[in-house]
Length: 134
Image (cartoon, rainbow, N blue to C red; front, side):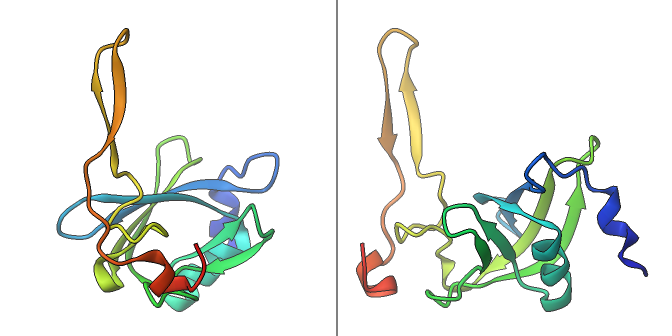
């Protein structure tokens, strides 16, 4: 296998591709992030999720601070070749920096005229005990 496989991905103008992270078994969508070519290459090498942090402007190995790494079982590219799907096992059952299982813990309820976002998933672990800041 050559590194030409990276050229198949349609990177955006910033050299990034959106990534959806889905849990193997439950099929829960755990999080959304971005990768650059180096992050995707490192993900393949390590077998663990590595992303590009836009806020920190550096590679981010998921779980580097929390220990909540994501073991990658499968990597897929969508039909337009501009979105990556990772199928993972989530260590510690926590993917979100808020201490929840998934980053998608707010659910819309109501109508277009009278709606609101409700928190529907509990915090599994206090973020300050995970990161020591928050």
